[in-house]
Amino acid sequence: MKKIALIAGLALGWFASSLQAATVTSANFSLAYGATSDGNAPPIWTDSENAGTNTPTTQGNFTFLPAVTGGNWDSAGPTFVNRTLTSGGAGGHVAWFGTGGGRSFSVPITASYNGAAPGDASATPNYQLQVEITKISIYGARYDANTLATMAWDETTPGNVQTSPSINLNIATTATEESAAASYTKLAWNAGSYSVPLAASNDTLTRTFDILPGDGSDYRFGDGLEIEGRVRLVYDSVVPEPLSGVLLGVGLISLIGFGRWRIAA
Image (cartoon, rainbow, N blue to C red; front, side, top):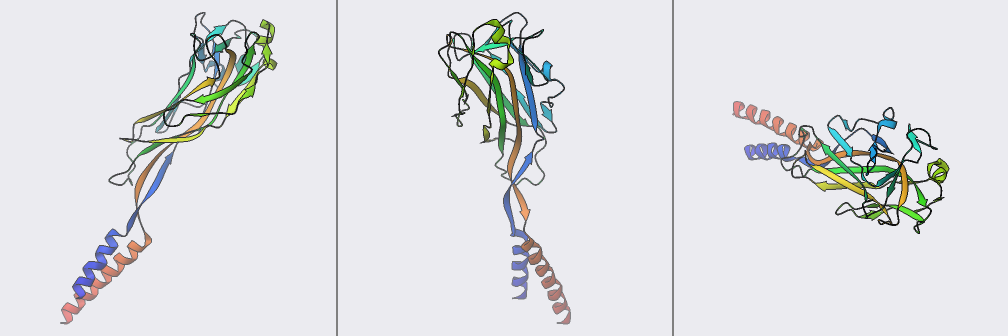
């Protein structure tokens, strides 16, 4: 009987551990882009105006990489040096964007975890990659012939389609107004977190954002894009419970007592 109790105690001590969700979180990412041009459409969304304020797109084991695409361009426009929208000046450009007619505008943000599998991951870790967008913002103005007087962010990520609150736009009728920072209104949105299951810990997740409403003939002026967020790897970890140590200790004590009983016998 004592032997059976010993085995049961050791078994309980061995199995009294649990699975719980664990998280590895990146440092904060913060990136900004201005609309510039090499003389050709579409515009070039570059971080050169904000090189001193941007974080790297890879930090530690995490990557957070926007790839801004699309739009048209105009030689008039504001600048976005050090994340400050400023009227005109040398190199001032603005993007024209809508959702068609050659002026489609898209902000895909691809994130990944590139490190080794966590040491405490369970045999079936159920990896998830979570991408949190704490801010995505851009300055917009209404083209004088444009009938669209509002603008909103539209997330088109499969499984997480959502739209931000909209803003009203000022009208920029002349090239001078088009280049004036005062003509632009900032559209900023905390888009929250979204996660997907991963087949492996190093798989990627892409969240994509567009501008609503708009088409090829009804478009907006835009400049000064900022994106901030963080990335998390979520998984099931094996965590020994305090009870397991107690039970294992009881089992060892039972083993010692059982041994002494055998010797005494």
